[in-house]
Length: 162
Image (cartoon, rainbow, N blue to C red; front, top):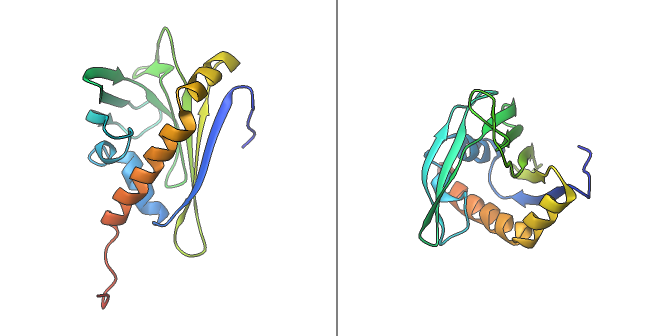
């Protein structure tokens, strides 16, 4: 994927959990509260309609303030790529002040883990800079660490282990 350094931010990691588990975490609403925002912030609601044009709505609690984020999925490649944005809400209704489009890319590692890449694509260099200054790398890094820790708990133990 071509990145534009003026408008895109990228975070890549190798996770010690299978890609299928990471995919489930990102696409099933019951998993989102366990990793989606850096603690001590929390997700209080999540609605997912996993189809192009389907909703991806979350409500966060950040320092006592409720923040609602409504968006849609733009592209879904089962188990490998998930693209969502807050540019539109369900029904392709434009939002007046969108923030970004997120692109999640997942691949398999030879040892059964996941190559994880998250891209935040912004409408302008200024919006990208704002996101970077807000702590993109630290915040999204914390989220991926929380995701990996949570996903490890979902991996079925191997028979005979222990």
